[in-house]
Image (cartoon, rainbow, N blue to C red; front, side, top):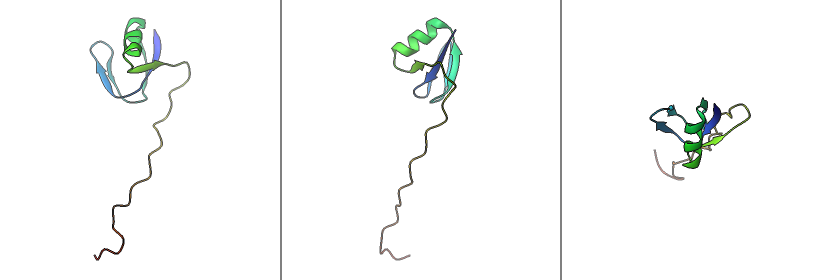
Length: 66
């Protein structure tokens, strides 16, 4: 069994659904296939948290009347 971290959200027929940055333990052959497709990476450490959100864009135009 190999611990992998999903690099993006995807679904695998045998391994199930993965959310981005989710860490799961899967069979070695599934892990190698997912890693070779660029969908996951092997990890030794605890899962990382969700990425920090980017600052929201202010869509209000300056000088616009309300």
